Length: 562
Image 1: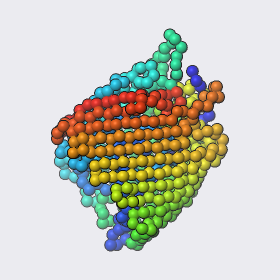
Image 2: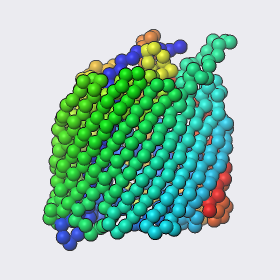
Image 3: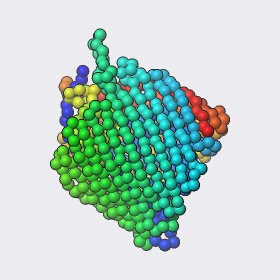
Image 4: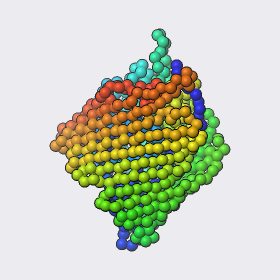
């Protein structure tokens, strides 16, 4: 069995403060909206996406009515979560914000149930129910279960399951919206990265089993009065995570965002976050982060500048840390002509890392992984974005960032079926070049081509283990006669390395090619059939060393809306 060192030093998860925007009023209220203005956002790779350039008006998104959105009502047909994690998505700069592809006509029925099955012993069950006939009140409930009884290694020893239940309540008036959410997630899987076994040797499933149970409760209130000069949003929530062994984490987070118009062109913005976290995995660790981000925004039809600072205080009882740091915030956007933007700026932050954020990125973590935040000392960025006409839109961005405690994942020394987080305690430099090109044709056809190139300059780590040098995706969707909905996509990753610290062997994983096709056929107002083909190339690639994924797999079934 391969093995690797426990060079753990601290983890990272970032909570990026939101920048609030507002709408122009006859009197000083909110930032004016420029046609074609785009928000910078962070994204993760998902399927069934389209590219749009919505006006960036406010971070606090208003809901015009308490009825469920078209996205909530429609049958989404997300058969399988096949995200290929590049690395910390909070460190990876995002480009154009994607939005989910929707059919031209929303279904007449708000509720639905869906069932499906496929190879690898896969089963899908999903449902949504909404109650919206109450005055100013909406209730929604959703359920989703996706499981595979067998996997790519030793049959049942690499099976997996994912179950999610969520209940949401919304109360809305002309002045504010109040929302509450209660959710539960159960993720079951196995540590199957043990490689070929000698003849007549078997592995006990109970010895390699892992299960994550997550419960979250969230409450939030936000302004809905478009005429108000003061805009605000306040959200708070508690998330409790437990695994099958002794690890647990309770995380209480509160986020506030506010804005006020000083003049028709000058606005004061503030974002504040408070996180109180207790993690127990053997020793108990209390880790807190408090952040405030005051900024001012000056805007004209052709020029916008946001300037201020981010002040953050982090404490860690286990590591005896109590420090406060400040980072500059400058963002400049120039619109020389039409909808073409040129932007640039500098910022920094403390990227908050939790057990839950690490498990989201790599679920095969070893016990007692040491957690530590990553400090993004400075990030200089610049680029251009906009609409080219004829249905084309683009964005290009270059980022040079400096980090302390930049982390990677590599197999543990004591057990290579599990991973530790390794940290660069010096100064790490990351150069990222991102580009995206999208095309849309009359809501019939959408295509998005995206690529990210990374160059890592590490101080103490040998390599950026587990992180790619190139990550690219090409997603497409086509709607025919409002009945046939087809999506096709291709993902490509290259340059991922891992090391076995027992043998000191360094492995460069084979390039990842993951092609997928989904077909939805609407049989009427209430029935639809679907089929999904994933990993059509049939490559049992490894995103992390010793963990091959399923080859060609399919899922098909039927849905009923009511």
